[in-house]
Structure formats: structure tokens, C-alpha cells
Amino acid sequence: MKMLWRLSREAIRYRSLYIIAIISTLMLTVINLAAPKVLSAMTGIVSSGVDQAGLGRIRMLTVILIVLYLGRILFRFLSNYLAHKAAWYLVGDLRTRTYDKLEHMHIGYFHDKQTGDLMSRIVNDTRDFELLYAHMIPETITNIVTFVGVLLVLLTINWKLALITCAPIPLIFLSGIIFSKKVRPFFRASQKKMGELNGKLQDNLSGLQEIQSFGREEYETEKVDERNFEHIRAMLKALKISAIFHPSVEFISSIGTILVVAFGGYLAYRESLSVEDVVAFLLYLGLFYAPITGLANLLENMQQSMAGAERVMAVLDAPCEISDKEDARKLTDVKGAVAFDHVSFSYETGGEILSDISFACKPGEMIAFVGPTGVGKTTMTKLISRFYEPTKGRILIDGNDVRDVTIESLRSNISPVLQDTFLFNGTIAENIGYAVPEASMEEIMEAAKAANIHRDIMQMPNGYDTLVGERGLRLSGGQKQRVAISRAILRKSPIIVLDEATASVDVETEHQIQQAINNISGKRTIIAIAHRLSTIRNADQILVIENGHIVERGTHEELVALGGTYARMNKIQSSGIGA
Image (cartoon, rainbow, N blue to C red):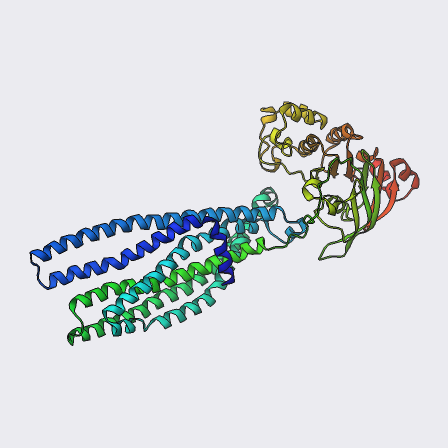
């Protein structure tokens, strides 16, 4: 009930549509209640003998029936269409809200989530809300009004027969309660399995080249088939219970009908009930049991909607662990000074990644982090942008603790160039101008020239209008990196983060990227992570990280002269043994 109440509050924004739909539903119910009464009156006229006056009454009742049936068409349209319109708009709103919530969640939230499962929650699970808002709510109102209305009419015809009609109702409600408890776990499992199937499909389609390269097509098809039929089996378990429940309700309702016919015939035999009333009672009997048997469909839809609602609300209710303080201020006029003040960090599920890290970088300087894989270098850059929060210490931008400023203003002053560069499926110009949509073509070209990619672009068939494909598939690794650098340059952020910008490129491309970095050195604060030491030789400060600690710091020349870890790494790379 708590979930239903919350879901009903979501529908308030479309109350005008729902009010018209509900009024139309009520009018439709009134028509459905009135039509049998008119038919009963016509039957009474015919059974008592039709004279001239009776013929006139039949004509009048016929006109009334036509008006009622035309009204039923109008009100059924308004009821169905407006309820569906409100429901689908609400589904659209919830999809956008769910996506927006995920878009603002901290990066740690996604560590144990599959992209496909989250997509299933946004698209599939929200779609089930349409069952609730377009069918359950209007039909529940219709059924309640119809049930009460018919019951009152039946009581006025013959109260004894009406009470016999109500005899099966407790059994129907009891079976409904049992059904609800039994079926929802299977619907919940079905939607969970659907999310897992979507997750597997998303992974496989993203890694299709690897699957084909290693000849694992058959293996992956078997895995998809396994996930596919896990979902089907879970759904069939729910449908099996439904297949038992629906005919059971119909059987119980049929018993009520048998009792009414038997007892009604007895009363007619005793002349306690007229033929006209027997006909009216039988006509209303179908209306009486229709909302009760409709309970089966409503309960099934409700359980499916509730299972989807739980998965959607789990996203909407997830705590946003990294958010603005109430008194957070905008970070303005940033020069680019960056400092770590005794910073430590650990993930929730693991040990300490960084321990007591302190350093300072002046505006326009280049600071580089080097060290083995997995020592926390990338984590340090993510801490600067508040994708994670330090467990101890402070991170300062121009002397401001990053936790005291708004996330939007903080990140607007930091532009990342990541090793795994992500490009959107659009043109090169659109990708370069992604963070500055109002940028002119001249500005985009200037940024491309600064990133040393302009010549490559001009050699492409459509120049800056060349489509890059999904994730930049049509560009080489080096070209994607330089497009990413162009994007960062165009944004004119005072701080640029280069995370392994030359890790996966050849020597010539590395040289081109190095020239791009040199073009912005001294103009922006550059925070670089590098395995190839040649790209950071000119850094103002190099920090060597091992086991979460800074073990060495200094310029390239100072560290080489020190003869420690950095000097050893430089010697290996200079001799061509490693890269």
C-alpha cells in the first residue's frame, strides 16, 4: 500500500487528464447500469402484450438505448485514451527522471552494476507503469462503482437473491490474496532476469570484435541462450500461477450464477419473482461478476507493475553519496592551483588505495604521476573532480576545498583526456565542440590545430563533418586521443587532466600528441599520468607513486640523478626494453 500511495502521488501532475478519464469512466458505468434496466422494461412491455401505447413506449425506450450506446462509445474513448495519454506521459517522465538520477550518481555506484540492467530499468520496468496508470486505476474505479451500483439494483429487485449472489465473493478475494503473494516474486525474478539478459547483450555487442577474434561466438550464444531462457522460465512460473488463478475465479463466479439461476427459478415457480425481474436479474448478473472476475487481470497487472516499480524506485531512492552542500558556492575565476593536503582514500570493499598524499601545483604548471599499474594514479585525478571523496584530508583548487564548491562549477574548470577516449556517434566537429555547443567552426578548427589533429581531419572525405562511428570506431587510437585533446582545449578549462594520453599509440603519434601537450603547456595547469616517461620530461614536478605513497618527487633531471625508482624506469624505457 505504501508503494501504491507513492505511485499515485506521481500521477498528480496529470490530474486534469485523469479527472476527465475518471468522470468518463463513471458515466460509462452509469450507462452500463442503465441499459439493462431499459431492456428489462422493454421485456416487461412485450411480455404483458403490446398495444398502441406500449408500442410508443418501446419506440421511446429504443431511442434511449441508442443514445445510451452512442454515449458509451464517446465515454469509452475518453476513458481509454486520456488514461493512456496520462500513463504514457508519466512513463516518459519516470524514464527521464531515472536516467537523470543515474547521470548524477557517483562513479562508485556503477562498480557492481551492468549497463544493460540499468537500461532495462529505464526502458522496460518503467513501461510496466502504464499497466498501473492506464488500466488498473481506471478499471478499479469502474469495477468498484459497477459492483456497488449493480448490488444496489439487485437488492431492490430481490434482496434474498442478491445475498445469494454475494456468496462466492469471500472465496474470490481469498484466492486473490493468495495469488498476489505467490506471483509477485516470480514477476520480480522475471524482470531481474530480463535486466541480466540486457546486460549480457550489451556486453557482447560492445565486445563483438573480441568475441570474433577469439572464436567465442558459440560460447557466447550459449550464454545468451541461457540468460534468455532463465527469463522465460521465470515468466512462465508467474503465468502458470495466473493460469490456475483465472479459471478458479471464473469457476467460483459460475457457482454464484448457478445458485442464482436455481434459486431464481424456484422463486419464479413460487410466483415470488416476475419474469421481468428474472430477466433483469440475469442481465445484471453478468455486470455483477464482471468486475469481480476482472480482479484476476488487475491483480496480475498490479504484481507486474509492483515488481517493475520496486526496481525503478530502487534507483530513484539510491542515496547520492557525492552531492553539493547546502551552502556550496560556485567556483569562479579559477587560476588552476591544485593541492592535496594529507589525502587518503579507500574503496568500500577494499583496503587503502592512497595514503597521506600531499603535493601542490601552481597555476600553469605541469605535474605528472608515474608508477606501476593499480597504485592509485587515476584515482587521484578522479578525486580532484569529486567522482570520489577522500576518506581523509583535503583537495584544494585555488585554496578552495572542492567539497565546499558546487560540483558543476568544479567540473566546468577541469577537462579530462582519458586513455580510453570516448567519442559520441556523431561528426568530428560535434565531438570537439561537445562541451562548448555554441563554439563556431573557426574555434573548433583552432582547437584542432592546437591538438595537432587538423591536418588528419582535412584529409578525411568529409573533413570536420566525418562521422566517427560508435565510440569513435572509424578513427585510430591516436586520432581519438587528439580529438579528445581538442575538446579539452576548446573548453578553455584552467585545469587539464591527461590520463595515459599516449599509452596505446605508436612513436609518431606519440610525438604528435606530445606537440599538442607542448602547445598548451604553461597556459593551463596540466595533471598527467604517464607510463611513457618521454611525454613528461618537461613536467615541472613528477611524483612517483608506489603502494599508495609518494616515494619520490622532483623534475626529470632531479629524479634521474637520484638513482631511484624513476631512474630505473627511465633507463629501461631509454634502452628500449620496455615502454
